[in-house]
Length: 408
Ligand SMILES: *Cc1c(COP(=O)(O)O)cnc(C)c1O
Image 1 (spheres, rainbow, N blue to C red):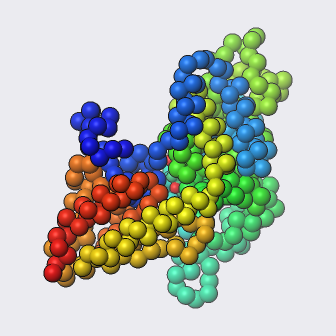
Image 2 (cartoon, helix red, strand yellow; image 1 turned 180 degrees about the vertical axis):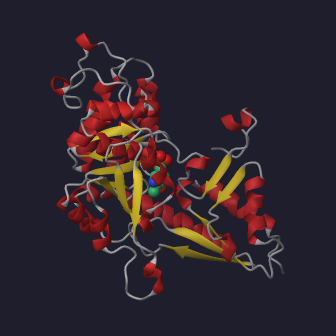
Image 3 (cartoon, rainbow, N blue to C red; image 1 turned 90 degrees about the vertical axis):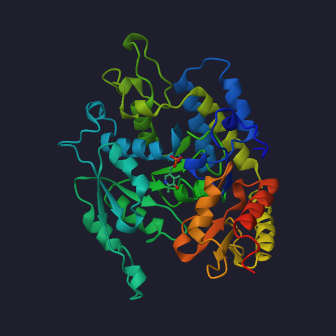
C-alpha cells in the first residue's frame, strides 16, 4: 500500500488501513504473495474441473503436511465445519443429506473447556454439539490442570464423533495425550491450527502427533487468497469432505469424479449438494493457495522472522524516545515466534489516555490499527509482520502526533 491516497479503497471512498496488528481477517488478513496472485490471474483465464484441481491440491497438501490427503477450503473456519461434517457423516450419504440436522445421529464433539473459542461455532455449523470438559484451575496455582486427561476420556460416549483441540503454544494437555485417549476409543481428533504458522515445520507437526484432521488458514502466514484454508488428514475423512463440498450438479451416467477423492463404485448414486456447497472454493483460490503453499515452504523462516524482529526493534527504539511511552519487545528471545512491540502509556503524563489514542489512530485516514487487547492495562501492541518499513515510520509519526511532545 502507498500512503498517498491511490489505493483502490481510496477510489471507492473507503479509508485504507495501515496494519500494525498482524494477520487479522477484519482488516484484510495479509497481503497475497506475488506468486499466488499470478496463479490466480492465470486460473481466471481457463476452465478446469474443480474436482481435478482439488485432487491435485490434495497431493500437494499431503506432501507438505505428511498427511494421507488434503483439501482446499474456504478459510480455516470452513475447514473446521467440513471436518465436523466428515466426522459426523463418514461415508453415509443419507446423513450427508440430512446435515445440519443431526436428530438421531451421533454428533457430539468433546473439547477441553479451555480450548473453547469464538471460532468453534464452525464445528456447530455442521450440526455438532460441543461437549466441553474441564475447568479453569490452572490459574489457581494449585498444581491442577485445566482439563485432566480422564475428564476427556469420561466424556467420550457412543454419541461422540470427534475430539476437538485448539492448538496454541500454551494449550494443554499435550496433543499426543489427547490423541491417545481419543484413538483408544476410535474417535478422530480435529485440530484447529489456523494461525500456528510459522514455523513451517508446524505444517507436519500435528499430523505427526497423531491428529486426524488439521485446519490451517491460507490467508495468514501462507499468504494465499484471503478466503482459502487447508484441511489435512486421513484419507477417508477427506473423501467425506469432498463429497460434502464438491458441486454435485452431476448427471449420474457420466458422473466420474477423480478416484482419489470419490470412490464412485462404493456410492449408491450421486450425492446431493452437501453442507459444504455454501463454502465454495473457486479455481482462482485453489490455484492461488497451491502457489502460496509452495512459496511458503520454500521461504527461509528464520530470515523472515529476523526481518520482523529488526523492524520491531527499530520501532521500539523510536517510541522509547517519546517521554510518556515505554516500549518493550515481546518474544524477542524466541526463534520461532514473531517479535512484537508492547507500548505502555504513562497516562499521568500523556495528553490522551490509551483508549483515546488507539481509537484516534483507527479514526484517521488511512486508519491505523495497532493491537488493542490490553488497552485496559494502558498498553497497546505493534506487530511488524504486515507493516512495511515506510509505514512503520508513519505509525511512529502518528503516535507521536497524538501524544504531543510527550507531556513535558
Ligand atoms: C484465524 C483463525 C481461524 C479462522 O481462520 P480463517 O482462515 O480466517 O477462516 C480459526 N481458528 C483460529 C484459532 C484462528 O486464529
